[in-house]
Image (tube, rainbow, N blue to C red; front, side):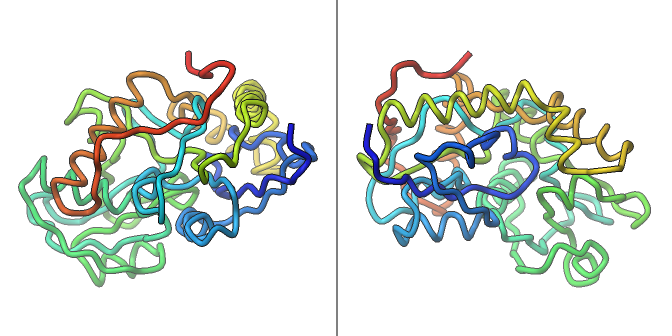
Length: 273
């Protein structure tokens, strides 16, 4: 195995915590945490070797990237933490205030509005503050921990869970983020290490909840339920089909170019269930 340090860019959101469980203790990895869009920017600029990036960013690199097989941030049905909020009827939405920290979510809501309602939306980048967003636009896209703990009913808004909407529309899981890296950056041993980290994270949800919300039993319960019931961390055959479908739909709308190729690092095992 190479003695060179592998520069990892990880997402600081709760939904990614199971994938990075204990990686800081591995001397092979040098880890930094950022919002998803910044993680993608660092990878594209080759300032990191591998990033846990929004899935759409795989298609936006300067050259073909590869996936680490197995670990991913996915859902099948409700995801809770990626949602559209509105005080209007969904078919009347024309403008969406976008929390643009994850470009995958921006692409997802664009695709779903077109395919479900035949509505073409205009995005307005904004900070994720619901009242201000709904004062400016017909709907608000909010993701991550902010969405997980947001009391939308108090703001008089309905919540449209985009994980549910995707699975209802396609019958498939949705893939939000994956480990993606530069060609030849990752060895089979590295793949196995990241798969083991994922397995340890999935097995230690209680510890993640306690660390994420220290001293707050109510929020810890929300976190445990979220990580056990909503977020899934395995990239299997159905997830790959869902990802391929997402890429195809995004390409049809001109959001990306997709040649149908899915490139994976070699691995001793694929890490899927």
